[in-house]
Each structure stands twice: as C-alpha cells, then as structure tokens.
Length: 277
Picture 1 (cartoon, rainbow, N blue to C red):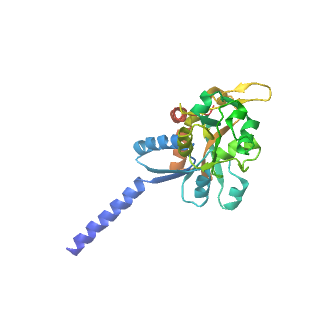
Picture 2: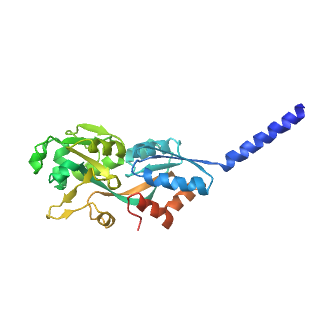
C-alpha cells in the first residue's frame, strides 16, 4: 500500500513538474501607454503558445525598475531610460526595442475646445504649466480658471511632454492643480471637468477629451493626426518600447518578434498608434 502510494505521489510530482515546464509564465509591467498593445499581444500568446502571460501597468518608471530588480521579463516604456536608472542597476544590460510610434498631445475638456481653444503654441502651454496663465480668457477662451493636470514624475508621457514645452523632462509644474498617474485616470479627470488641460497619448483622445493642434513659430498649425505623427511633423512624438535585460531569448524573443511581424503591427495600429516603418 505504501509502495503504491509512493508511486502515485512520484507520478503526480513528475506530471506537475512537466506542467510547470510547459506552462511557462511571462511577466510584463510598465507604461500604460504601451499597455493596450501588449495586452492584445498577450491574448494571442495565451491561446497560440499555451503560455501564461501576466501584464501589469504602473508607468514607464515601474517597468524599468521592475526589470532592473529582476521581477519581470519585459518592461514597457514610453520614454528613454535615464542615465540615473542605468547607473542604479549596473548589473543589468537594458535593451530597448521600438514597437511603434505615438504622440503626446496636449488635451483639453471638450467644452474648452468647442469654445474656441483648438490650437496653442508650446510656449503658451508651458506658461499654463508654470502658472503664468491661469484663465482661459487670456487665450481667447471662456472666462474660466484653468484646471491644470500634471502626471507623476516617473511617467514616460510627462518626460516627453515637459521636454517639449519647458525644455526639461523633469521640470516642475508650479501651475498644476492635480497630479495623476495613468492615462485612464487623466482621461477620466478631463472628461469630468469643463476647464481642464492635460497630456495624453494620442490613442486616448475621444469626443470628451480633445487634442490641441500646435501653432509653430512660422504660423503653421500642426494637428495630431496619425499621418503627422508618422512623418514626424507633430512636435511631440516618441517611440514606444519594450525593454529586456540583454538580448531577448526564448519566449521573450518570440513575444517581441511577434509584435514586429505584420500581424503584430496591425495590433499596434488597432490600439491607435503608428506602426514601425
């Protein structure tokens, strides 16, 4: 009886080990901008490769730090890795893999857009975030105090936006009234306001959250269209990245390679971004 029980237990353990080997886990975390793409790619892998894929957001900074700590296999980022982050993890060889292109768009509540504020200069946007312009009336809009929405300092969207409007990706926003994290949080806050300005990925615009065109010093007005983003004409554009520790291998390489195939790039476009040319 004991011998039979031992054989049964041994068979169970062998089967469990086999199952664990076959059902490998891929862990991914980071940018909420990149998240829609990776979530859809993950669904494909769960079905096609019998692989468990765990995807969490948290922002580009979280993706970079989690990869540095060895807690995930792939990081998601919508900005470049900083020198400080690289020095923080000297034993990690960060590699960035571009999977698509995006624009960071200054956005306003639909009420402000419909009242006539549809394009601003980068200087005007910067003055709003510095607290120098506090009422939409100064810019030709309604007599309404501006609700200025900033993002957490580790967010990739903020890095790109602040570099463009204030010349410093870590610039302080003295005029900010709210500091939020994810694209979803900021989108919701702008939808619920009738006087807000914020910064969002182009893919997060909707009928209640309107993207502003940028007025250039030559007098031109550049709309945040996919064509302008693709051609690099819109002034606040960026690449979207997945990150690995060293050259990707095995399941990690297979996952990234799929994103770069025509089928994977269709997912990028479906999510509202521009495919890699």
